[in-house]
Image (cartoon, rainbow, N blue to C red; front, side, top):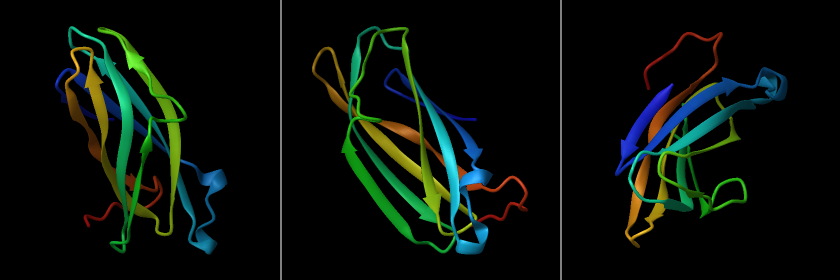
Length: 130
């Protein structure tokens, strides 16, 4: 599990390689990632938007950004959490993702909550450092 906290917003990431949705012979490798966003601050925060940079093992990058996550812009109260699962395909059997969420606190402060960088590696492959 990967975990990082920014200004009272703790983000944890769990990964799962989706073998049934992947097709290695067609250069398609798919991962699901589950994000847990916990508010450890003393005021509510709202997730407004997301930014991702997805990089495969050949150095090709894809930038993804947009409002909210999975169709929501959740308000997370102090001590509460929001959890969702999404996925990403790659053309190579490894890579990594990094990103951030634009958050707004109840007091009106906007800030970037950093998503911990995480590695996408097939469980049956030997890990190589990029």
